[in-house]
Amino acid sequence: MRELVLGTFVGLLLFMAVGPGQAKEIAMIAPIIPPHFDDQGRGRIGDVISAVMKHCGHSVTSNMVPFGRHWADYKEQEFDALATAEADQEFPGYTTKPFIHLQDGASVVEGSGLENAVAVESFAGKRIISFPGAQKILGIEHLIPTFASFKNQAKRFDQVRPLLAGRADAIFADGLITAYFLQLVRKRGEAGQEPDVDTAIKTRFRRIFAKGPQRLYFRDKAIADDFDLCHRELEATGALDSIAKPYVDQYRSIVGDQYPVR
Image (cartoon, rainbow, N blue to C red; front, side):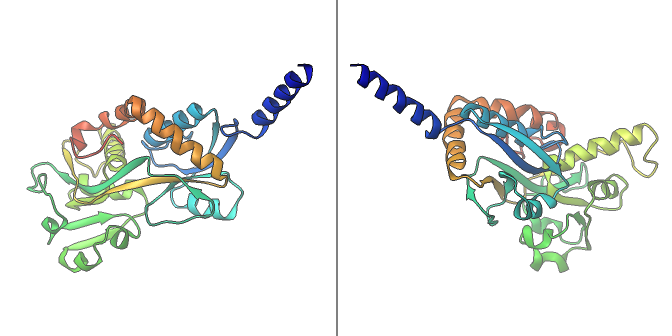
């Protein structure tokens, strides 16, 4: 009997040492793209990741860098995880299943005649501002000649200022990120810090591109599997929508029903 109890105890210790779900501290690299991730890793996406990892018993240390650098740094440095990867991107390690979406589209001036646009073709002859590489990422390379102009701007402020100053007709980019920076510039304008912008201009977001599913990459397959399992469990309770929804609701006056909660 003593041997049986001892054997069971030793077996339990071994299971705890090597069994699935063992708590780990995960060093994750992610981009600063508010309101999805702020410079502390909080936000619509950041909070969902933290909740899922906590449900698994893991914790996350966020290493925040400018957008675009996170992909390069994950490949070149020894981070445990990457947030996030687009559908067509591949990185070292093991991918999760999609757990949240970004939504690219067109941010336009209310009353411009574009606020009900449903297709990118509606913007023929218009002045467009977008992000670097947008032509390929959005699949609109063949349409570029149809626009009056198409400019790529890396800095978010340089994307939104022309729209509020009447120098552009639309911004092609993620609707929530654009709404965040539109509000910042508008507040700066109201404080007299943006003399070229018209703070009375109202904007609307139109969902003219497909949703972009987002995934994580982990060096450890067991952690990637944990994330998928815990995500399914939390998703079934509605907890993840409750976490993400307030970040979208802050900008409902701009994005309306055109941006997904997750």
